[in-house]
Length: 67
Image (tube, rainbow, N blue to C red; front, side, top):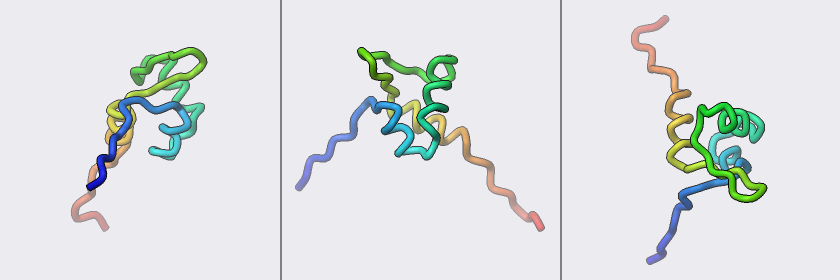
């Protein structure tokens, strides 16, 4: 049995990999206040919960009966 741990914070590179949103867009979101973030030295860290929130807000609703 493996004990896999998911990190609570990811750098902008990790957020880019997880969401396919560019690192520059993540930086813009953080500095504009759209996304909560933590500055640790030179690194900009983003909570995984914030990454998931942004991804879920980007979902479009399913269209029923369209044609």
